[in-house]
Image 1: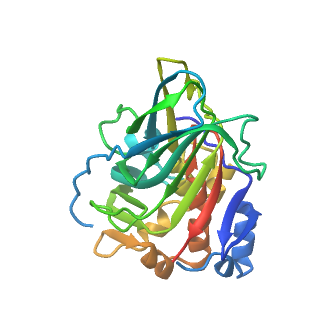
Image 2: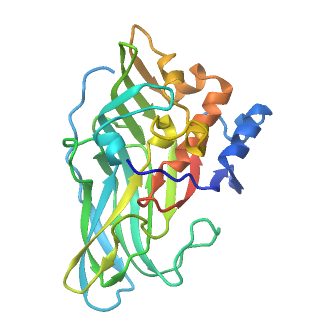
Length: 307
Protein backbone atom coordinates (compact mmCIF):
# COMPACT_ATOMS: atom_id res chain seq x y z
CA UNK A 1 0.00 0.00 0.00
CA UNK A 2 1.28 3.44 -0.84
CA UNK A 3 2.09 5.90 1.88
CA UNK A 4 -0.50 8.61 2.36
CA UNK A 5 0.36 12.28 2.67
CA UNK A 6 -1.56 14.54 5.07
CA UNK A 7 -1.84 18.19 3.88
CA UNK A 8 -0.36 20.75 6.25
CA UNK A 9 -3.23 23.13 5.77
CA UNK A 10 -6.95 22.54 6.23
CA UNK A 11 -9.35 25.13 4.92
CA UNK A 12 -12.52 25.28 6.99
CA UNK A 13 -15.64 27.42 6.73
CA UNK A 14 -17.60 28.17 9.90
CA UNK A 15 -20.40 30.73 10.04
CA UNK A 16 -19.11 32.24 6.82
CA UNK A 17 -15.58 32.75 8.12
CA UNK A 18 -12.62 31.06 6.42
CA UNK A 19 -9.40 30.27 8.21
CA UNK A 20 -6.45 27.92 7.78
CA UNK A 21 -5.70 25.46 10.57
CA UNK A 22 -3.51 22.37 10.71
CA UNK A 23 -4.55 19.04 12.19
CA UNK A 24 -2.07 19.61 15.00
CA UNK A 25 -3.59 23.01 15.60
CA UNK A 26 -7.03 21.41 15.71
CA UNK A 27 -5.82 18.97 18.34
CA UNK A 28 -4.34 21.81 20.36
CA UNK A 29 -7.62 23.69 20.20
CA UNK A 30 -9.45 20.57 21.36
CA UNK A 31 -7.18 20.25 24.38
CA UNK A 32 -7.87 23.88 25.17
CA UNK A 33 -11.60 23.22 25.14
CA UNK A 34 -12.30 25.61 22.26
CA UNK A 35 -12.60 23.28 19.27
CA UNK A 36 -16.29 22.61 19.66
CA UNK A 37 -16.84 26.34 19.34
CA UNK A 38 -14.98 26.40 16.03
CA UNK A 39 -16.55 23.15 14.81
CA UNK A 40 -20.08 23.15 16.22
CA UNK A 41 -21.69 19.81 16.95
CA UNK A 42 -23.20 18.70 14.38
CA UNK A 43 -26.96 -1.78 10.87
CA UNK A 44 -28.34 -3.94 10.09
CA UNK A 45 -28.61 -5.82 6.77
CA UNK A 46 -26.25 -5.16 3.90
CA UNK A 47 -27.96 -2.81 1.43
CA UNK A 48 -27.87 -3.24 -2.32
CA UNK A 49 -25.55 -0.96 -4.25
CA UNK A 50 -27.46 1.64 -6.28
CA UNK A 51 -26.87 1.99 -10.01
CA UNK A 52 -24.74 5.08 -10.78
CA UNK A 53 -26.49 8.07 -12.34
CA UNK A 54 -24.50 9.42 -15.25
CA UNK A 55 -25.92 12.91 -14.78
CA UNK A 56 -25.88 15.72 -17.32
CA UNK A 57 -22.54 16.89 -18.67
CA UNK A 58 -21.71 20.43 -19.73
CA UNK A 59 -18.60 21.91 -21.28
CA UNK A 60 -17.45 25.52 -21.05
CA UNK A 61 -14.71 27.39 -22.90
CA UNK A 62 -13.66 24.51 -25.17
CA UNK A 63 -10.22 24.69 -26.76
CA UNK A 64 -9.29 22.57 -29.76
CA UNK A 65 -10.72 19.23 -30.79
CA UNK A 66 -12.30 17.10 -28.10
CA UNK A 67 -12.16 13.64 -26.62
CA UNK A 68 -13.70 11.71 -23.72
CA UNK A 69 -12.78 12.34 -20.08
CA UNK A 70 -13.52 9.37 -17.80
CA UNK A 71 -14.17 10.40 -14.19
CA UNK A 72 -13.76 7.82 -11.43
CA UNK A 73 -13.90 7.58 -7.63
CA UNK A 74 -11.26 5.51 -5.85
CA UNK A 75 -11.22 4.25 -2.25
CA UNK A 76 -7.89 2.49 -2.92
CA UNK A 77 -6.80 -0.89 -1.58
CA UNK A 78 -7.76 0.21 1.93
CA UNK A 79 -11.41 -0.09 0.90
CA UNK A 80 -11.18 -2.87 -1.69
CA UNK A 81 -8.86 -5.21 0.22
CA UNK A 82 -9.12 -4.09 3.85
CA UNK A 83 -6.34 -3.08 6.23
CA UNK A 84 -5.33 -2.97 9.88
CA UNK A 85 -5.95 0.26 11.77
CA UNK A 86 -3.31 2.01 13.83
CA UNK A 87 -4.75 0.39 16.98
CA UNK A 88 -4.74 -3.16 15.63
CA UNK A 89 -8.28 -3.67 14.30
CA UNK A 90 -8.50 -5.60 11.02
CA UNK A 91 -11.07 -3.69 8.97
CA UNK A 92 -12.94 -4.90 5.89
CA UNK A 93 -15.66 -2.98 4.08
CA UNK A 94 -18.89 -4.27 2.54
CA UNK A 95 -20.04 -0.85 1.36
CA UNK A 96 -18.58 2.65 1.34
CA UNK A 97 -21.15 4.98 -0.20
CA UNK A 98 -20.09 8.54 -1.02
CA UNK A 99 -22.58 11.07 -2.35
CA UNK A 100 -20.99 13.49 -4.83
CA UNK A 101 -22.29 16.66 -6.46
CA UNK A 102 -21.03 19.47 -8.70
CA UNK A 103 -18.16 17.36 -10.04
CA UNK A 104 -16.00 19.65 -12.17
CA UNK A 105 -12.77 18.91 -14.05
CA UNK A 106 -10.80 21.94 -15.21
CA UNK A 107 -7.82 23.02 -17.27
CA UNK A 108 -5.95 25.83 -15.49
CA UNK A 109 -2.97 27.97 -16.47
CA UNK A 110 -1.09 28.61 -14.27
CA UNK A 111 -1.68 25.27 -12.46
CA UNK A 112 -4.01 25.51 -9.48
CA UNK A 113 -2.18 25.16 -6.15
CA UNK A 114 -4.68 23.99 -3.50
CA UNK A 115 -2.36 24.94 -0.65
CA UNK A 116 -1.75 28.52 -1.78
CA UNK A 117 -5.22 29.79 -0.95
CA UNK A 118 -5.86 30.94 -4.51
CA UNK A 119 -9.12 30.77 -6.45
CA UNK A 120 -9.25 28.24 -9.27
CA UNK A 121 -9.43 30.05 -12.63
CA UNK A 122 -10.38 27.60 -15.39
CA UNK A 123 -9.65 28.21 -19.07
CA UNK A 124 -11.78 25.14 -19.88
CA UNK A 125 -13.92 22.86 -17.74
CA UNK A 126 -16.47 20.06 -17.84
CA UNK A 127 -19.18 19.49 -15.25
CA UNK A 128 -21.33 16.55 -14.24
CA UNK A 129 -24.64 17.95 -13.05
CA UNK A 130 -26.73 16.33 -10.36
CA UNK A 131 -25.83 14.03 -7.48
CA UNK A 132 -23.87 10.80 -7.86
CA UNK A 133 -23.85 8.04 -5.22
CA UNK A 134 -21.05 5.51 -5.70
CA UNK A 135 -19.98 2.52 -3.61
CA UNK A 136 -16.20 2.63 -3.32
CA UNK A 137 -16.21 -1.01 -2.09
CA UNK A 138 -18.05 -2.31 -5.15
CA UNK A 139 -16.39 -5.28 -6.86
CA UNK A 140 -13.68 -7.63 -5.68
CA UNK A 141 -10.26 -6.85 -4.20
CA UNK A 142 -8.80 -6.14 -7.64
CA UNK A 143 -11.69 -4.03 -8.98
CA UNK A 144 -11.03 -0.85 -10.90
CA UNK A 145 -11.91 2.53 -9.36
CA UNK A 146 -15.64 3.19 -9.65
CA UNK A 147 -16.92 4.90 -12.79
CA UNK A 148 -18.70 8.20 -12.13
CA UNK A 149 -19.27 9.44 -15.66
CA UNK A 150 -17.80 9.74 -19.15
CA UNK A 151 -17.98 13.28 -20.54
CA UNK A 152 -17.14 14.96 -23.82
CA UNK A 153 -14.28 17.33 -23.14
CA UNK A 154 -11.91 19.66 -24.98
CA UNK A 155 -8.40 18.34 -25.56
CA UNK A 156 -5.80 19.51 -23.08
CA UNK A 157 -4.48 18.86 -19.60
CA UNK A 158 -7.13 18.63 -16.91
CA UNK A 159 -5.04 19.58 -13.89
CA UNK A 160 -7.79 20.42 -11.39
CA UNK A 161 -10.82 18.57 -10.03
CA UNK A 162 -13.53 19.75 -7.65
CA UNK A 163 -16.57 18.13 -6.05
CA UNK A 164 -18.93 18.41 -3.10
CA UNK A 165 -20.12 15.72 -0.71
CA UNK A 166 -23.82 16.23 0.03
CA UNK A 167 -26.55 14.05 1.59
CA UNK A 168 -27.70 11.32 -0.79
CA UNK A 169 -31.19 11.89 -2.15
CA UNK A 170 -32.16 8.21 -2.35
CA UNK A 171 -30.82 4.68 -2.01
CA UNK A 172 -29.33 2.88 1.01
CA UNK A 173 -27.36 5.94 2.14
CA UNK A 174 -30.20 8.46 1.72
CA UNK A 175 -29.67 11.46 4.00
CA UNK A 176 -25.93 10.89 4.44
CA UNK A 177 -22.82 12.14 2.65
CA UNK A 178 -20.74 9.09 3.64
CA UNK A 179 -21.88 5.61 4.72
CA UNK A 180 -19.31 3.00 5.79
CA UNK A 181 -20.36 -0.58 6.52
CA UNK A 182 -18.12 -3.54 7.30
CA UNK A 183 -16.52 -5.55 10.07
CA UNK A 184 -13.60 -4.99 12.42
CA UNK A 185 -11.76 -7.84 14.17
CA UNK A 186 -9.23 -7.83 17.00
CA UNK A 187 -8.11 -10.62 19.36
CA UNK A 188 -10.92 -12.93 18.21
CA UNK A 189 -13.65 -10.30 18.62
CA UNK A 190 -15.52 -9.29 15.47
CA UNK A 191 -17.69 -6.16 15.44
CA UNK A 192 -19.99 -5.39 12.52
CA UNK A 193 -20.11 -1.63 12.03
CA UNK A 194 -22.13 0.98 10.18
CA UNK A 195 -20.97 4.59 10.40
CA UNK A 196 -23.24 7.20 8.78
CA UNK A 197 -21.90 10.72 8.30
CA UNK A 198 -24.08 13.77 7.62
CA UNK A 199 -21.41 16.47 7.49
CA UNK A 200 -21.17 18.18 4.09
CA UNK A 201 -17.75 18.78 2.54
CA UNK A 202 -16.28 20.25 -0.62
CA UNK A 203 -12.91 19.69 -2.25
CA UNK A 204 -11.03 21.72 -4.86
CA UNK A 205 -7.96 19.79 -5.93
CA UNK A 206 -4.90 20.35 -8.08
CA UNK A 207 -3.08 18.01 -10.44
CA UNK A 208 -3.35 14.24 -10.01
CA UNK A 209 -0.24 12.79 -8.36
CA UNK A 210 0.57 9.10 -8.80
CA UNK A 211 2.61 6.50 -10.65
CA UNK A 212 0.70 7.23 -13.87
CA UNK A 213 -0.22 10.61 -15.29
CA UNK A 214 -3.95 11.32 -15.46
CA UNK A 215 -6.09 14.00 -17.04
CA UNK A 216 -4.04 14.55 -20.21
CA UNK A 217 -6.59 14.35 -23.04
CA UNK A 218 -5.50 14.22 -26.69
CA UNK A 219 -7.97 14.99 -29.46
CA UNK A 220 -10.03 11.93 -30.37
CA UNK A 221 -8.75 9.93 -27.38
CA UNK A 222 -9.78 9.20 -23.80
CA UNK A 223 -8.19 10.16 -20.48
CA UNK A 224 -8.88 9.21 -16.85
CA UNK A 225 -9.24 11.48 -13.85
CA UNK A 226 -10.16 10.39 -10.32
CA UNK A 227 -11.38 11.62 -6.98
CA UNK A 228 -9.42 9.63 -4.39
CA UNK A 229 -10.49 8.99 -0.79
CA UNK A 230 -7.91 8.20 1.91
CA UNK A 231 -9.64 6.24 4.67
CA UNK A 232 -6.33 5.55 6.40
CA UNK A 233 -6.57 9.19 7.53
CA UNK A 234 -9.58 8.19 9.62
CA UNK A 235 -8.47 4.82 10.97
CA UNK A 236 -4.68 5.02 10.70
CA UNK A 237 -2.50 2.29 9.26
CA UNK A 238 -0.55 -0.32 11.23
CA UNK A 239 1.88 -0.54 8.32
CA UNK A 240 2.96 3.05 8.98
CA UNK A 241 5.15 3.98 12.01
CA UNK A 242 3.12 4.93 15.08
CA UNK A 243 4.82 8.33 15.30
CA UNK A 244 4.05 9.18 11.67
CA UNK A 245 1.79 12.23 11.31
CA UNK A 246 -0.79 10.03 9.58
CA UNK A 247 -1.24 7.85 12.67
CA UNK A 248 -0.85 10.68 15.14
CA UNK A 249 -3.79 12.48 13.53
CA UNK A 250 -5.98 9.40 12.96
CA UNK A 251 -8.88 8.36 15.19
CA UNK A 252 -8.34 4.60 14.92
CA UNK A 253 -11.18 2.12 15.35
CA UNK A 254 -11.00 1.70 19.13
CA UNK A 255 -13.15 4.77 19.94
CA UNK A 256 -15.83 3.43 17.59
CA UNK A 257 -15.62 -0.08 19.05
CA UNK A 258 -16.35 1.44 22.46
CA UNK A 259 -19.74 2.58 21.09
CA UNK A 260 -20.86 -0.98 20.29
CA UNK A 261 -24.21 -2.15 21.62
CA UNK A 262 -24.87 -5.89 21.71
CA UNK A 263 -21.65 -6.36 19.80
CA UNK A 264 -22.61 -4.05 16.91
CA UNK A 265 -21.58 -0.48 16.08
CA UNK A 266 -24.40 1.40 14.32
CA UNK A 267 -23.89 5.15 14.66
CA UNK A 268 -24.57 8.36 12.81
CA UNK A 269 -23.11 11.84 13.26
CA UNK A 270 -25.42 12.60 16.17
CA UNK A 271 -24.43 9.40 17.99
CA UNK A 272 -20.76 10.11 17.36
CA UNK A 273 -21.06 13.56 18.88
CA UNK A 274 -22.87 12.15 21.90
CA UNK A 275 -20.73 9.04 22.39
CA UNK A 276 -17.16 10.04 21.57
CA UNK A 277 -15.04 12.02 23.98
CA UNK A 278 -14.72 15.73 23.18
CA UNK A 279 -11.15 15.16 21.98
CA UNK A 280 -12.06 12.16 19.80
CA UNK A 281 -15.06 13.94 18.31
CA UNK A 282 -12.92 16.95 17.43
CA UNK A 283 -10.35 14.61 15.88
CA UNK A 284 -13.12 12.99 13.83
CA UNK A 285 -14.32 16.37 12.53
CA UNK A 286 -10.77 17.47 11.71
CA UNK A 287 -10.14 14.28 9.71
CA UNK A 288 -13.19 14.53 7.44
CA UNK A 289 -11.77 17.40 5.34
CA UNK A 290 -8.61 15.38 4.70
CA UNK A 291 -10.34 12.40 3.09
CA UNK A 292 -10.41 13.83 -0.44
CA UNK A 293 -7.38 13.74 -2.73
CA UNK A 294 -6.46 13.29 -6.38
CA UNK A 295 -4.20 10.26 -6.09
CA UNK A 296 -1.62 11.60 -3.65
CA UNK A 297 -2.30 15.14 -4.81
CA UNK A 298 -3.74 17.55 -2.29
CA UNK A 299 -6.99 19.48 -2.21
CA UNK A 300 -8.26 22.67 -0.64
CA UNK A 301 -10.60 20.93 1.77
CA UNK A 302 -13.58 23.08 2.67
CA UNK A 303 -15.74 22.29 5.65
CA UNK A 304 -19.26 23.29 4.66
CA UNK A 305 -21.60 22.21 7.46
CA UNK A 306 -21.73 20.26 10.68
CA UNK A 307 -24.76 19.31 12.75
